[in-house]
Amino acid sequence: MCGKDGHPDYPDAYRDGVQDFYYETYKVAEGVLIPRPDTELLVEAALAVCGALKTPMGDVAGIVPSVLTSKMMIADLCTGTGCVGISVSNALVRAGRDVKCVLVDVSDEALSCAASNLEVALGDVSVIKGDVLGDADELAGCIGSGLSLITSNPPYITDDEMEELPLSVRYEPELALRGGEDGLVFYHRLCKIAQNALEDSGWLLVEHGYLQQEAVMSIFRNNGFCNIMGLKDFGGNPRVVLGMWRN
Image (cartoon, rainbow, N blue to C red; front, side, top):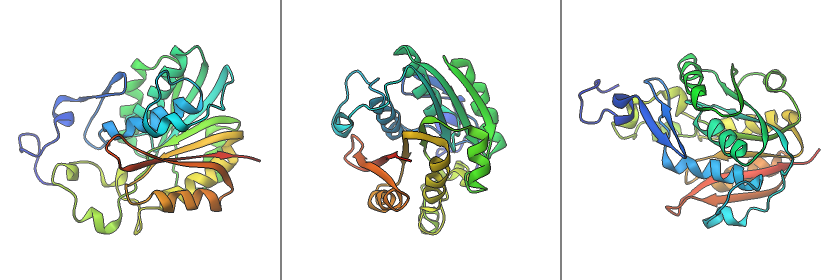
């Protein structure tokens, strides 16, 4: 940690206590990952899968809607502020869907922050503590089965990259950033959890680092997912992978 509030590199989101993301403004606090515009692609991809994105652009326009049921259960793992799960849920509610959403994190600071952001949630959204790197069956039991979607922006920075982070990013929690030696440890576990929790033809959607797309797509394939797609963000960087689970 390189100083506190008042240092020129101290993040504005921590100083202000809020951050705009998609169509909402979310509370943010130290100890919780700050929402970033690039992550909005993850939200748009989830909405495109559900046919609830009015004007898909870029790579998202290539997603064929397949989750069209009126009642849906979704989960957002490694939720942080809850911005992804709440934003997806809110957009689906606005589109006329009946949505139940679970926000999951292992960090008490993140869970507290996500709980405070429930005030902007429109649907049935709850917060539970769960460890993605723990027992996959246990976590799947906590979030339930028959889910239509699982989203996640997990830690994906490699051990080497952690040593080269800009000063402003070093204020953010290592727990939400470090993804192991190769940055991929969470994706293997997310696939295992999704296998147990998703309904037939449900979708897992994840954010990843810009050099990791092929590796994440390979992890999806090796875990039996199909219709796998990799999406670039509007800066042209590979950013999101999604895949369908078929029992």
